[in-house]
Length: 549
Image 1 (tube, rainbow, N blue to C red):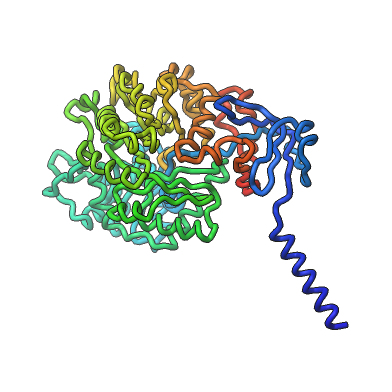
Image 2 (cartoon, rainbow, N blue to C red):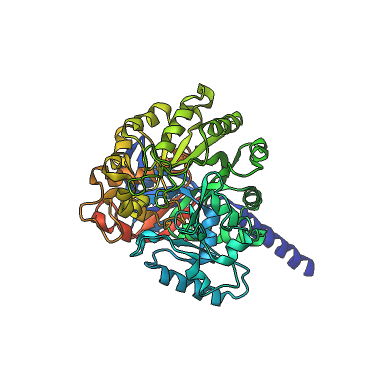
């Protein structure tokens, strides 16, 4: 009898193991207002059928029920269903670290910013450095850069380093400057600038390449901190309906960690990682070759050619309207960019090049035009990241060369209060010119550039459609002739962003044979007032046929 019971238990356990490893049952999610793109056209459906994470069909419930058998039926209760949204330009580690450090986004004065830093420092007394990000002097009444003195008054014994919202400037206290060896005699590094007072003393603000003088003194992240930051970022993005993200600049340590996480199935959304061109081990990563795993793809490199408009580091063909002796900073020369392109394309990798000012965009287009067919943008889908200010006559070159414009709609609504001051009215014609790009048949892959901007993709959709901020201002939108339709904006956050990562045959639309990555939201973005798009809430996020949020 004892042997019989043991045999029964063994058989039961085997049965449970078989059930656990069995294929997922065919599932029909019906009674939804579904939207996707098929052959470039917007298509509607009310039901989606999927099995083992793969879409079997979309269409009308009655039709699918006749043609297919299914075991699980889920009522979508009339909610709107969209393909999983793709953020084509963000910074995963930066987002995670932002969630771990003092957040200065949206604070409207230098004094209030300092108070937030003090509050964080008091709650984290054991941190060796006080680190944060998000200050933006454009929001302050003075609109002037901050100084070390306001930080020195409240914290003198610990170094403080606070990145500007765009990541192209930093603000330090005297302790941090001293550790970096910055004094009156320190020269500006190539591609960077130390802001100085009338006596030549460093004020505490460093621009672009000068930031590394302080950042090189910050203790490096350990593996545990990196893993924690990435997990926080993953979870945050999934909660916002983002099922795939293009990580714009991965250093060697993060590259190794991502490979490890992928091997252990610990990456919960699809990551298209760009190798950092600034990493001294770039060629070693290129030699390892392309990575093409279900949730991790690596076959591109991120380069920088200039800084940002807000900190006057974007490289312009003519001087800044509000600083006539300044044309910005070229961080990479044409010769150096040519060398990078030769190296990167030798290994068959895509090159994604940060260019904000019209001088930087001009240089990149010139260098890309020199590539032969096998290394061209039409073959390797090279991208210009941001493409914020472009000479209007050069916009058609993007399509002619096959260059993808990787743009971030919320940059326009964040920058509109200062862009006119920086550029003057004439150069605004080619600034944040999404409609002009589309009208010239340029592929736009949309993103947010988090943590520079908030990661919520519905803020980006809203900005693209209305050209307004979250307060729906200005009334008719900023440079309103550049507005996109809702369908055009959604396409840039889905199938076109998938194309920009060589994943268009797997994700980006809800079609037979593709992955069941989709979201359910509380409003129909095609029928609600456009000024409500940024209020949309994500109810459920599904990746590979599994509900993950």
